[in-house]
Length: 238
Ligand SMILES: [Zn+2]
Image (cartoon, rainbow, N blue to C red):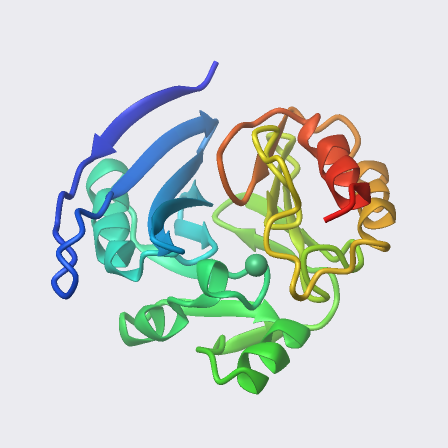
């Protein structure tokens, strides 16, 4: 059973426009895996984005940089305080700002930043922050007794989207490639390949059968049915 272990309400005010900004929420998933949520203003409304972190004996690995980059330090501080471990590295699952937008800040903090070569190329093309380290093919990161696996399923939300498999816990982190059961549409589809998305979902299901938790990039939830829901949304007229 998942349970909220602590809630950090950093009720800072956005200095320029004076809008109350939501802070950082961290939730224990299972084992040494945690999800976290930060918020960002989109079309005048605050919208949440989910990322994850894994605590190993050597330090923590963050999956996706907080959409609200002012929460990078609070996230690092809470990991240090709660788990007595430094943040070693951050891996972004595609090039958008809710996944990779904090790369430059992590670099300044001396934390390794990672993405695929394709994500790096798109970040560079759009003049977005880029990772310091890249990988070309699906890669297994072995850190502090844990192995996590990156997987490129094919195009979906973007042409560079990857998912992360935490095999020891059977947790699939979908990022924006996976839509929450709460999502009513496919979200931002400006760079999506809706026609290819369902087949890409099938590749994920085949590669990682028996996922206990599937974590979408927005709106929360852990239900593996989010994979089929994503395919349904991709097939719907947008
Ligand atoms: Zn995106």
